[in-house]
Image (cartoon, rainbow, N blue to C red; front, side, top):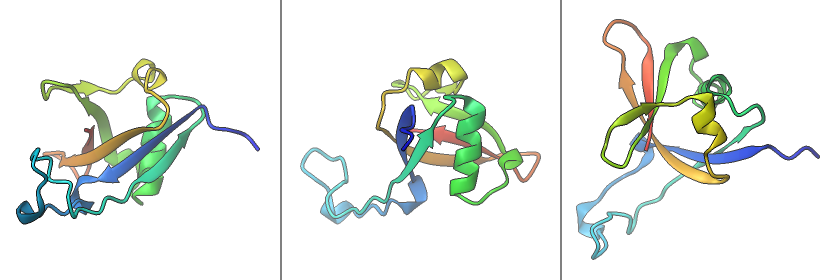
Amino acid sequence: MVRPRLTIYVCQESQQVRDPQHEHEDGDGSAGTFFVYHAVYLEQLTAAELCAKLALLFRVPAQHILQIYKQGPTGIHVLVSDEMIQNFQDESCFVLDTMKAESSDSYHIILK
């Protein structure tokens, strides 16, 4: 059995149902919320591989994903590169948000 070099877990933001009546005292909104994450196994640790795996997982053509960004601590969007993926911690969890491209049927993905 071959073990992947990196495993990350992703969840689509639209799958997260927020109910303000069930918020924790700390305001994180996670009480009563059911999150479904999908495991993504990466072997080559490249942005192209991540794009292909996310396209497969969410059943969209890979060419419809224009860019993948990671949201930084101040809310900035940083373009995901091979080097960034090589520095992800194993078993990191991300919530995916999608932004529709203005000029086509393509999307930008944001890892939060």
